[in-house]
Image 1 (spheres, rainbow, N blue to C red):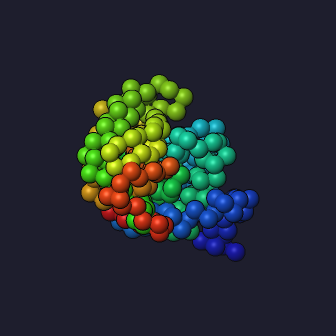
Image 2: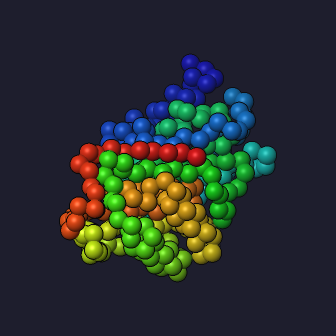
Image 3: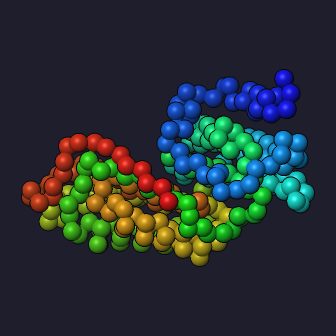
Length: 268
């Protein structure tokens, strides 16, 4: 076996020990590697890419974020992963491994690749993206069957909560999990009461200002797609916002909660 078959077989061999739970995440991934040129089979670019992805996989078992660089110009590769701050190390490693496998399956000869899953982001490129905020691509995942028909929820309650978390996140760059803040509170309003769990997170390569900029983009995306959903998760390449409503106890019928369960994913 030679050429691409040998290279691909070696790459796949590294992944045979992945758990089924990690592999099942592929159906919920945003895979973006369609806008960049291919590389040749013999290019050192491929070996540099493999070195970066291998480094990221190894480091995913010891932290929620890492970046890596390999090779000399013009074949330099830059890579990073970011796991949600509420994941343990095993779950982070599982996600990065499964996501890297998806890169090999879908983006093998691409100069750049980005994969966003429910639990982590993995990417590499021939152009450095460290410290940068990017407004595309992004993903929005949210429940459509259950809606919270409360005029006060997004206009006040959720925005106030996210504003407070964004401020706390921008001041937390020195924490063990930088720029990660989550919070849960019980909310009582005229329409009813519920538990609101919200979380914000930025990639540690951002400075506090750019972390805030990225999270504000995510709030803007949230307001346009899913502000009345009982669950929503917004991912950009360098930050994420998620919230969930539970223990819902309506006081009046105007709260309007349906019983069906569904999930919608939008990508731009």
